[in-house]
Image 1: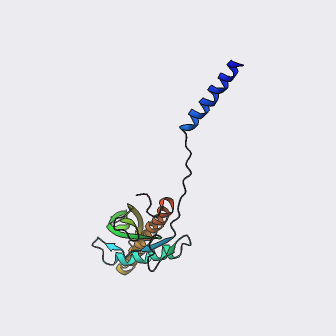
Image 2: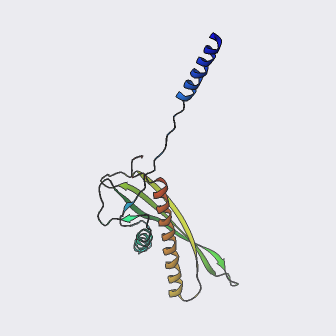
Image 3: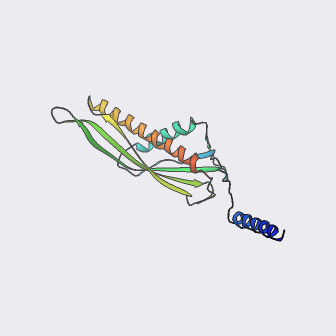
Length: 176
């Protein structure tokens, strides 16, 4: 009997010691619902790219039911999305029989700062680079329209990625 009680005591002690080192945390992910889109800053020589990016941001976030775009930010609820277009570059990737460029690859890099409304410093900063292709055949006006359409598509891709990152890591600025 004495041996059985000692064995039982060691079993209980072993369970307690083993259980003391293990703490289960259930992470509660807060969903970013309210956003405010700050005007896009253009840091490139490309005129008007900020306008195209602003339109793409509006198209992306206003049509996404997962977000509520605030016209006036609300303290403790709104995440300010502050985008800037840092670079744009084009590389010829397709040539015709006369060795003239007929297709270009366009790459754009943007920096996104996420700032909880009411604070000065961002709680998250990240860069996104996206690319697209456009056909360079036709009249100069047609080529410019294709290039503009390519920029718009890249901008939409970048803001879709911003939306996904807001949802995956959006903690309303509680963890820097």
